[in-house]
Length: 83
Image (tube, rainbow, N blue to C red; front, top):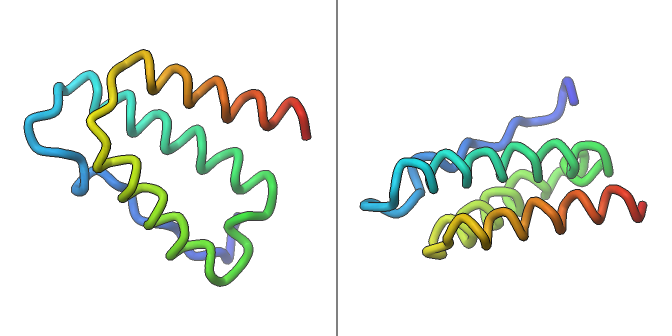
């Protein structure tokens, strides 16, 4: 991880008016996803930081509910287990 550029946190791109709990859970999801991506060397590629920004922007633009975020956490966890 050290030496790799750190992607920006998506907090400023979260939809205005979203419930505080959803914002917090979305940030938790981004941290979980980022942690798993670092484990697969995704972020070691020079183009990964722009890709990470695009992923964060796309997911932040969605008006997700708690259940949808829990599902995404499960997907990321499942990918780790299958690798």
